[in-house]
Image 1 (cartoon, one colour):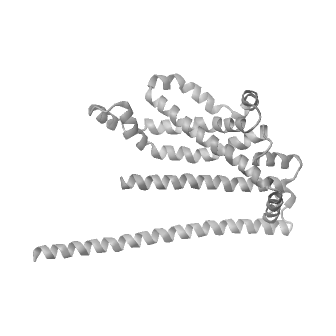
Image 2: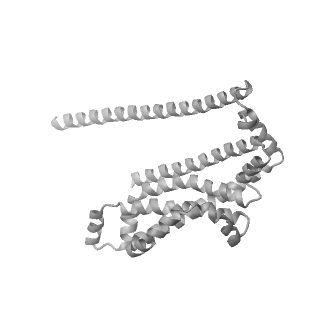
Image 3: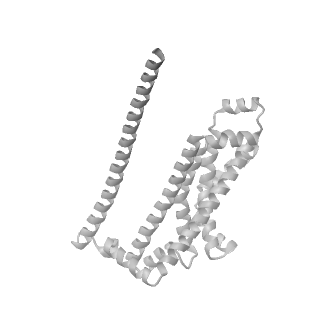
Amino acid sequence: MKNSGKETKQKRAVTLYSIEHAGFLRKQRTKKAVILSIQIGLLLFILGIWELATRLGWLDSFLISSPSRIILTIKELSADGSLYTHIFTSLYECVIGFIAATVLGVIIAVVLWWSESIRKVLDPYIVVLNSLPKIALGPIIIVWVGIGPQSIIVMAVLISVVVTVLSILNGFLSCDKDKILLMRSMGASKPQILFKLILPNAFPDIISALKINVGLAWVGTIMGEYIASRAGLGWLINQGGMIFKLDLVMTSIVILCVLATLMYLGVSFLEKRINKKRGKI
């Protein structure tokens, strides 16, 4: 009888926990839906005010364009297929630069963590590279690798890689020293410490570096297309500015914002998937 009473209490506790947990999840979903609705509503409100202000003459549509003129420009560029060429060109250059900068940054950060001597020797050079305006290297990059996607990818990598190194290295060095000493006392090798402790501990910093790199890779891509390109969104922005066709400039900026947002959401999705797997483990 006593055992059955205990089992009944346990079942009640489990049921109560399940009900509370389901309620919590429902509140979280509702909260997310409300936030998303507000975000979409705010965007539509801004676009509506923008369109209304230009139609009523409060703002000059020649200088800042308008949503309707941007849609018209997109249709014109889509008609001859040039829009897709420019989007693909910029997206290809940005994604390759993003991946290359991330991989190279992680490798350099691992090397700097691995050897304190190398880290101390290279520290002032990293500081100088980080403070150097990368656009100043544009002419040199063109001479080295030529005009085309390769020079733009190099520009995107140069702008992103130093920040990646600093962010990830900071994550490596912030790992609890006592945990490292514990693993060493248990006979763990340096590669084991790196893969079992340092990298998992620095996961939030790696994801943060990826999110920052999305913006930096696009900055490098657009800057590179300003200097040396025959296609791409940066080329469209440059051409639109030169001939005072600001509808083209604003259209390119809007498309650029959409692509950057999609890349950022892709990184966020990757973060959630990895967190789920880590949680299961």
